[in-house]
Amino acid sequence: MRRYESSPSKPRYPTQIINPTSKSFTDTFILEALLKTHDYEVVFRRHRQYSIVNPITERPVRCTLTNKIIKLKCNPNGKHAGEYRFAVVGRIPLGNGGYGKVYPVTNILMFNQDGHLIEKVKSNDKRRVVKKISYDSKTTKADIFHEYTLSKYVPHLHALPPRYDEKSGYLSMRRFDAVHLGRIISDDVTGAAYLTLEQRFLLCKAILQAVKDQVHDRDIVHRDLSVSNILIKKMADDHYQAFIIDFGLSKIAGAPNRIVFMGITPYHAPEEYFPFNKEFSTRKSDVYTLAHVISRIFRARTLTTDEVREEWKRGIIADGLFSGIYDIDLVSKEQIRVLLSSMGQPVEHKRCTIDDAIGKFELISDRFFRNRQREKLIESLGQYITKLQQALRDDDYAIKPSLCLFPPPFSIAEKCKVAHKFKKILQSSKETKIDKSEVAVLSDFECANEVYSFINRESFTPSGLRPDLLPSSLETKPS
Image 1 (tube, rainbow, N blue to C red):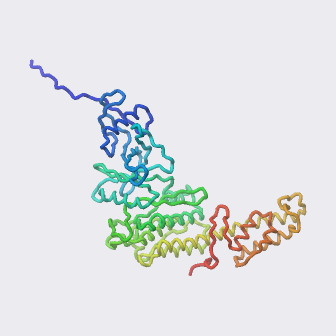
Image 2 (cartoon, rainbow, N blue to C red; image 1 turned 90 degrees about the vertical axis):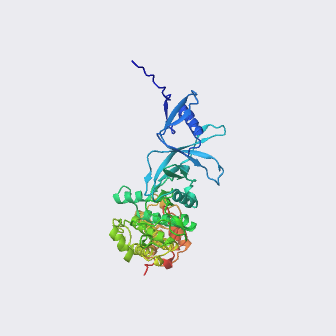
Image 3 (cartoon, rainbow, N blue to C red; image 1 turned 135 degrees about the vertical axis):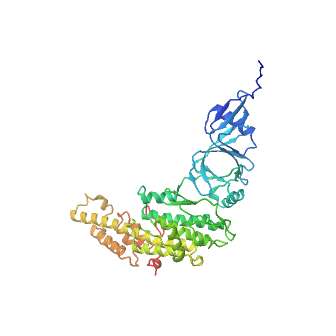
């Protein structure tokens, strides 16, 4: 019988699974060897096998990663220019868009001066995300680099130069401790987190100002503003800070459009669409979009395709506006409708600018907050008068020490008289002035100085509300 000798087989190396998020001693040393051995790699992919020499056993091994690692270039203009950082990317995306997916960066690795791999500790406001943009017939490396170029003009994004592999491009930017505006609106509609009327006004003001400061003042036309591309952070004083993100479709003002919209969405201006699209979109295209964003904050519903086409003919529809918002007055409603109509004109040159929109909304919100402050002061004065009248009936100062902090000549009757006078002035809304000596009569009334400032139209900071006051000449219903 003929015997066959078996051919020598290739040596089988053990496969080591490395978790880059782990702090284990073994994983750190093997990962360090991997990054040094394959330093030519830009993207270290999950489940791909890499051959290295185990620095502990000094034997060949194959290792595979549980998380993708991207080799990032530091800011070329920063103090770490020329250095690299290794971003460990999470496996579950934070969000999906039409042009990419956004993943969290779980931790960042770097080599110290001794050449050893360490983890770079990041505070919450310095965390990062990675936007993965896959190549297709519509997206190329040039498109990804274009987004990075525009993102550099927006300081709050902290964008780093893009990295590429054979299938995708990767953009690393700052991760915000904020939520999408769409989530806030959804929670408001479903009742999970109802927005007060004050919060709606403050949200709109923050968004309008953010578009001006972060986009238009930097000579950028965003072209893709929506509730998904606006992040909202609630501040300690109950105000809001807005961040504009996703500049993939943006362009420099005055430059030709790089991308033509073929589909129809309820946010984009009519001049953005084929066959009506113009070669040069302007900042007013973003103003049209903001009209829809503001209408959504005030409970307008999303439009169908046919309704969008109807808007192109006669202006913004805003169907369902103010539905379920019962504490807004008729004048504020009318003023907001007039503003939305001015922002959402189908003909571009008839629309207002972002500065006009901010100015008009300032007047609307100032009138609203001033009326709210008036109601608050009238209520406080009413409670104060009730206590005074009760003390007057009891005629016992010892029982009411809080009303007798100051001796005569300010009797309780005098206090009642002055308090009634101030209350009537607030209720009548007439132009008048009060003397400081009258306020001294109500020295035990905690809101006395606020009443004086409000009636005399001086600047003040009521608790929980903004300090701006509406000039009397503007406190009228628009014609």
